[in-house]
Image (cartoon, rainbow, N blue to C red; front, top):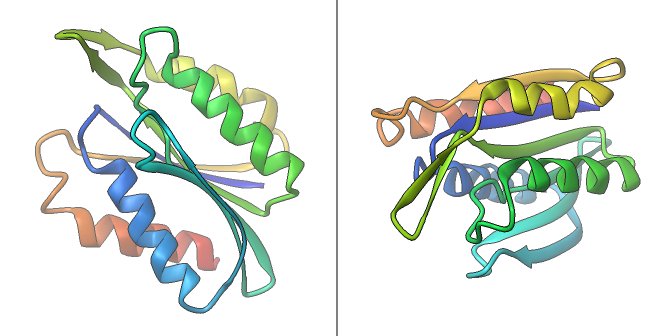
Length: 151
């Protein structure tokens, strides 16, 4: 499985970027599964068949509750994509998140350790979202993800 992960702080448009890629792929793909997620239902899990590939999307990466940490959502996404036998997983990982004015930081190494189980059979492509220029790089990042999916 190819894993394409958007890595950035909370509120750097990771979910919006994943939704944009999802919508582009869906134009020529077949929707196999869709489920809203998150406290506000703004995140989602989905499967699309596109160009003979099964692509899993798991947008949730910023927990809305301190009982959950980003790594929990990453693991859920990996399990979802594996169970559905996806060829590609597009997901998000938050380096930090806010809850009641507290900012929790998570190391990139935490994410690396979570996906290490999948690395032997996976191509892992991190796309780091610039904390200060995420709006300016939106189209560029969207195109890069679609190119990676197309390979």
